[in-house]
Amino acid sequence: QAFRERMPEVRLELFESLMAVAQPLLRDGSMDFAIGPLHGAQAAQEFACEKLLDYDTAVLVRQGHPLAGCGSIHELLEQDWALNYTGDGHDALMRELFWRHGALIDERRIVRAHSVAILQTLVEQADMCTWVPAIIGAAPPLLGRVVPLVLRETFEPRR
Image (cartoon, rainbow, N blue to C red; front, side, top):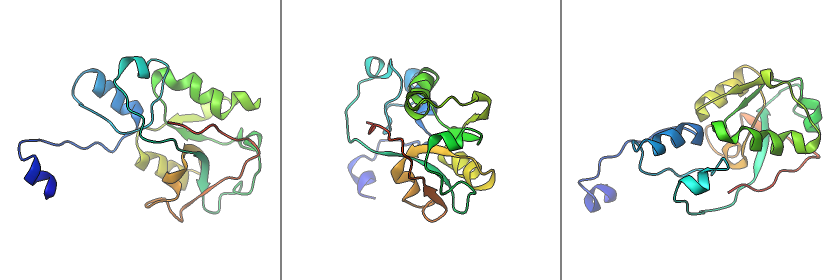
């Protein structure tokens, strides 16, 4: 209500999406701004960006997943994964999550998911693994439904 009082002429359209969906909309001008992680080598050059925060990431599986107690990314290479990345962010994601740890995954095991709702469904209903900002697993609607894995491998904080 306070927003409408201060800016009555503004028309809002809200997207429940991840940056792989937002970047093309930003490019073609149908979206004015996005709040989310900066992915892809070209993104910082292509868009005006302002850093809001650094955040940690986590590998998540559903509560009760058979591998919920595993300790290494290498134990998860035969699992299916639901991941989100921009077209130009594929190599950076693969490098951070798998390759720099010497883990080589068959990329046919990766399903690209373009919303948190799709990620949630695939993790909860299809026993897939995912790698997302850690806060996603610690807040509704995933709180209590997924568990972060404690892995030997560590991941650099994202921005």
